[in-house]
Every structure is written in structure tokens, then in C-alpha cells.
Image (spheres, rainbow over the protein chains, first blue to last red):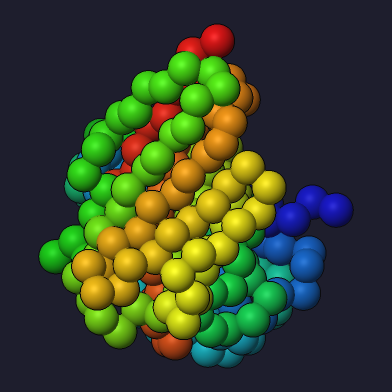
Length: 114
Length: 111
């Protein structure tokens, strides 16, 4: 059981480039989300989805797009990378949508924008 | 604004003693609180949670206490073990699933 899989694990981008961070889960979870982790800031919610075809913005959505065409996949797209987007990105999924749902996290993608 | 705060960036305790990690929140709409543990180069893993209708939840060596009037919760680990050394994140969520995390506390348990 792979759980939540993120690719790539590491990525270096030049300012202005675009890329997609991939996230897939095999637990048939309805709820998926993307976080970024920065020093001293904890994890901040970027976007989330409560099911296929439904997405919504989190705390820090600017500069990112998401789509949810299947239950399994929830890619995060950086439209035009900026140095401020240098961070570690985590994808998470949970079985139910609602307060207190245990989230399962991927191993993270470390992104550097130069 | 940071709605969930962990004011201690680090904590060091001796093996076998109690570890107490603290967390404060500002949003009274939060009704579930969770603790996650994170090892280097791994994603966070769920540890324990508590509903706002309770003031204590226990799971083996881990106990979470909630003081709603003070908007404060704490995680107690007894006895602490070297394998508990990790970063611990406090998180809070309301019914809309918007989960907010604290900045984390790095726990070091010395043998």
C-alpha cells in the first residue's frame, strides 16, 4: 500500500518557469490538499479538494493552480515560478471531509527557485 | 495571521522523563485539534487528536490536554524515548476542513 506518493522529490527551477508537482493516493480518499512548509511558519494550506471536480483555495493560493479530474490524483501547478515559492511542498489526503479527519501526507517535494 | 502558535521552537528532555509540548490558538471556531510528528525527509504522520467537547485524550504514552477557556492544548509524552525525537506540529481545524498548523517544536530526547 503506497499511500500518498509525490513526485518529484527534488526540483530546481528558474524564475518564470512553470512546472507541475504530482500527487497520487491509492486509499480512495475523497479529500486531498497541498501544503507548503517554510521555516518558522509551519505548514500552510495552498489548495484543497473535497472530491473529483471540486477544488477550493486555502490560506496561500496565489501563484498556484490545481485540478482534480480523478479521485486518485491532485496535481499542483506553478504558473510562473518565483523565488518566494522556494519551499517544501506536501500533499495530503484523508478519508472524510470534516474537522478532525486524520490526514496522510506524502514525503514532500523540495523546490528551489533561482 | 498565525492562528495556531507553538512558542517553543525546541525542547530537550532526558530519556524516561516527561515531554510537554504546548500549543495556543486564537480562533474559537476550531473544534478539532491534532498533533503530527515529523522525521527529517519524511511527511508528517498523525499522532493523536482531541475534539473540543473533551478535555483529555490518551493513547498509550501520549496524552493531549485541551483547555478551551485558555485556548491552549498540550501534548504529554511519558516516558520519553529517543525514538520520539522529531518535530511535533500542532494543528487545528473547523468544520470546513481548513486545517491550520503551528510552526512546530523540535523535541530531542537524550539517552
